[in-house]
Image 1 (cartoon, rainbow, N blue to C red):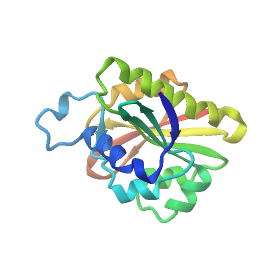
Image 2: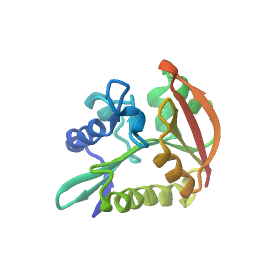
Image 3: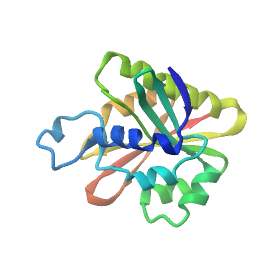
Length: 181
């Protein structure tokens, strides 16, 4: 498996993973889900403008298996300074050099190899972030109406601490997690 920076050519495959992980109230079984991107789709255009050194993919001989979409504070503040999203406004208010981990996703997330792939991808991202470049990392996990237990437990295992709740649109509540490097 190769971990590398995402390129424009990767966007269609990344978009396929994003779409595969979507959970919405329109799905009949959404309340039974314990993971997934709850009503948080990304268009191909949004993925293209998000290309930066912290946007990485895990590639095997079978193609792209996972992606990690993250931004350092400089890129995030420059790219999204005019946001109206409360969760992003909250991130923009943070000081210092930080990493904002927006999404991480893997194909066939319930398969045996999925956990290994996501851990390898996450560990590489955090290893680089801890190399003295960044002071903190932030991530959000959906808590209401869908509690994304898998992501919350994943972040805790990586050393993140839940620091606050951020209510956003459509009665969704996110938990903000922070990791000091």
